[in-house]
Amino acid sequence: MILVTGATGTIGRALMNELRAARVPRRAMARDAVKAKSLLGDDEDIVQADFTDAASLAAAVDGVDAVFLLTAGGPALAEHDLAMVRAVQGTRVKKLVKLSTFGADTLPLKSSEWHRPGEQAVTQSGLAWTLLRPAAFASNALGWAPQIRAGAPIQVATGEGRHAVVDPRDIAAVAVRALTSDAHDGQAYSLTGPEALSTPRQVAILGAVLGLPIAIEDVSPRVAADRLRAAGVPEAFADAVFEGYTCWRAGNVASRSDDIERVLGHAPRSFEEWARDHAAAFRSD
Image (cartoon, rainbow, N blue to C red):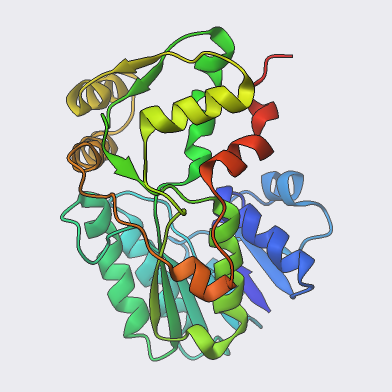
């Protein structure tokens, strides 16, 4: 039995789909069980739990053999990771697979700092473990859909800096392997797409797939962060976005990894493939 935390998010839902297809027993953890059932289906085993409630975590891990640990980014992330590590001690759980972030071990970013205590807790838990450090998700492009439908330009704060964005389905596929095989124990995988692309290049690829001209608006990382603050995004998240965009724009996240190929035995999906598979989400008709 595998417990999937963050089960209603992008990666969590993709992982639940992968486990279902592989006929692996699974349980979804969510703060809102009603919402989870609407997203995952009434036939899924769903447990309502919260990282701030130790009793609910104990119930969530009861009878579980492995945990996929996905905690929302932010200052509370580390404490949530630590809460789950504490919850599995002395239970039948034998493995933890933590979703971390690209460059968690190397990049001097707030997002890395949020993940490092959890990575350390997982690797020192006494259990089998695997760390997954994915690049930015190809699916983040879905945030451009309202502008594309309205014919408005896409805000680009990363300039010509390149990044090998990764398809969430590939992350989920690697997670299944790590959760169900001991071949990946003790490994930290960087998960990237096949090619480092600039954001303008991603927009151009998406435009070609849709058959639409898509304009871009080049803005500085500071302007992008200030717009988030004006929209009500908490300061810590806006600061993290500013750091991330600045790092990306400077060309510091352009490296790619072959870890997906090594784990899955085939190349990761390209951004163009992701765009073709999700083209309907950007169309107004």
